[in-house]
Length: 397
Image (tube, rainbow, N blue to C red; front, side):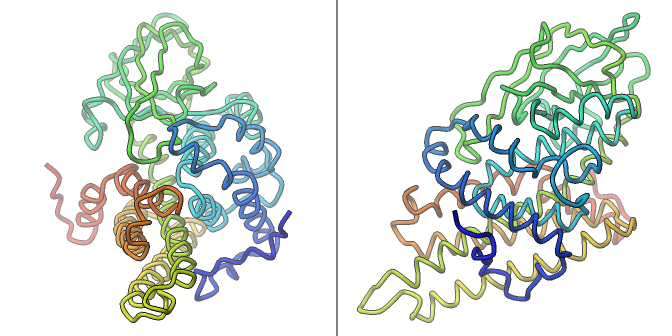
């Protein structure tokens, strides 16, 4: 097995990894090795098939990488701050954005929602098993007819009936839902019109999750259409500290920056592939890397990576210092994903015709970038959040 210290990140041109402590860097290197040894050999075939390799769940269970942001609930290593958590997301996406998204839904959205919106008894009930990955989580917010306007347009309802709640409605694009043990479902209380959170077990009567087929991006992720038909949930399974959409927004604010880190990882993965290909492929009697126009694409890619990494490094510091605001994560998500789109296109261009076949991997990065560009708030919605912050004027419809 390759030593983690031998697997250097050639895109770290300014030495950003040095911002981590020695303990944190050990976790990052362990993440790097796990992705290279356990995930890399699987992803091309699984991506082509559009299926999630369930054997990865057991491998994650043994990795000690799950639950690190939630001190006392799992993981082997220091309680992860935002910088380490972000760099772990980057490392995973550097190999495969689908697996990084699976992990982000479980370790980020689902576990964070329970940690932030549940009471202590609920944290103690669900988080240890999720941190060991004995159970897998999902997060059900988006609906078939409502995405960006979900705050006002949520149609899934919750009706109190004694000591239980009855959920009815539909959700769409719910990652992990086809095999998740615990699904955090957001629904509007018909009595007070406020959004509340519920932890629904996957086998609950009336709960149905059907995999969305024919995707051209993040094909390994099993996104699902979820239907809730008179699903009965005990009051004990309602997240006790979630009483309005503001609580949902708090979860999204915290996890949106993680998507920006994923975008950085996709950039790095595509850049590394292009750099390796350019130095090995020969045309007109010389390596592609020896042509000015190819070097221009590589340098522009490295510039996007470096500037995005610097932005995210400071964003993590703002989060750890407790002075982090919505517009900070929105600017990062909008900006970094736009730079990602440029880099994956330039990388694919360097491959020429070979860039459209999975054998060379870059096509996977090119396609997966489109989903990351859109989820956790589109560029347009995040632009409006930042625009309101800097102008004082709301341009939302």
